[in-house]
Length: 296
Image 1: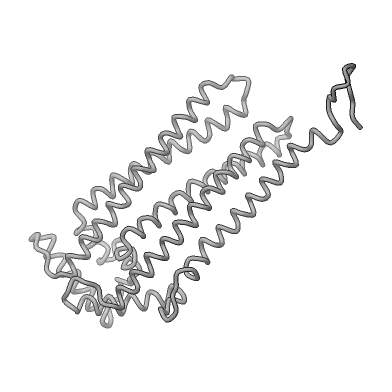
Image 2: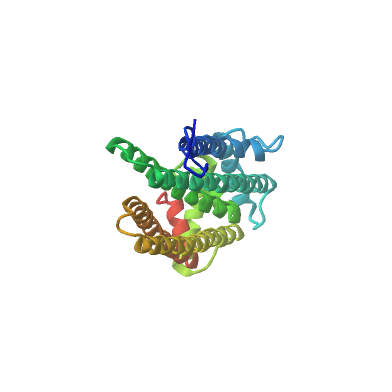
């Protein structure tokens, strides 16, 4: 039933006020479904998308075994260039991280959209009970934290694309003391100790491992500091909005303040990560030695 004022212009319809609410609810439901799909895809899809016939990387255990055998072969080869088996594993691992990075970017975009939709619904909702307010705030806060975590996943996987070899050898069970791998790890430890003590790198394979380890940490330093700059810009925009919002708009101020605190803390964390990785990149041998000693 439509109500009119004297000029015959519709004031409202019986179904009108509920349409924005229904539309927002459908959008949120669709975004939640998309987030669930891409979360599952992040875990399951990369291996299926990037494994080529005959590579034998059916699961992580098979990959670890392949890396174990081929790392020993590479170390014993006495040359800098990868053996065919190790090259195949490194190529696969780079493709794997590339797929994960793309999916993580999509997931991050979905979570940012979902978080915005939840916070806007909270701000624009009418009177709410204490329980509904808590539900809105909890959901919005959780999705915001998940978005920040997704951005970390993007960073880590881009790092894996840039330096797949160092990422791959991080899977080695370096604590193993028996067999060929144990002997190889012992030799790596010995040469790294000599390298850090005298400054002389002892073998082509070790030289490549140290330089790639430096690239691995330099990549994260650059990625983290770029992300910190973006996060800082978001923090400034949010706090400016907070300062310009009237005190009477309590929900808007609450949302802006909460997001501003989270992004400020995230920015500080990214700066710490960036600086730490920059230091490791400048002197990678001790950190690599710590890894082979089981310290990382």
